[in-house]
Length: 230
Image (cartoon, rainbow, N blue to C red; front, side, top):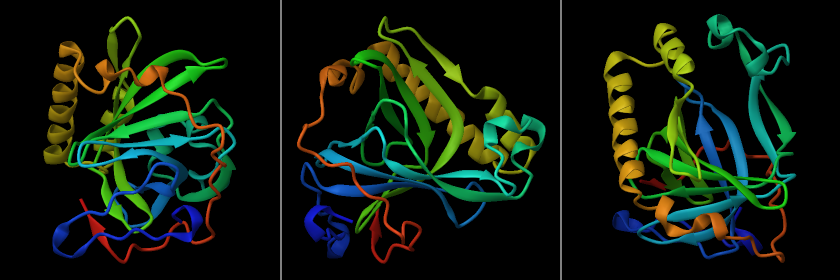
């Protein structure tokens, strides 16, 4: 779904063709322990090169999110049964302020920036996940439950440790994967404590191009990629 109908594909031999600023792509997550996609968010490319992919999810963006089969929002279901009840997906809109997402190639987390209304910077959010896999019209990953919040005063804290533990109890993460995720989190904490990139790069002062349109959610948002690279 590249802007203007342009399709960018992974080049032969493992080389990657980068998207240009302003192009529109999909940022998706597979369901844990399954092959289907249950989160899809159309985003606009801010920067894409060998060092970093940065994308903007605008307020009002139509997205796909998981719900229980009866339509109950996941957060409304008790944690003990949240990951075991049948699920469906729902098209919805992102009604909060926009989100800037940053990911470095091969890194097992992405960093999201949140603002309060009026562009008052709120926090960075380290989302632990599989390294992004690139395909023609976007990137795919799998969320690993555990997260880290980082605040403007450089303090930080673990988030969703209860969900991380429940996912292990419910068999969505085996001990080997859980250990790998925890190690990734410790590596991210080392970057935070050293105040390395992207925290030190001033992204909290970035603003989107006012000429950018809100990307549409394509009907085939869950299509299987024909070409993919890491």
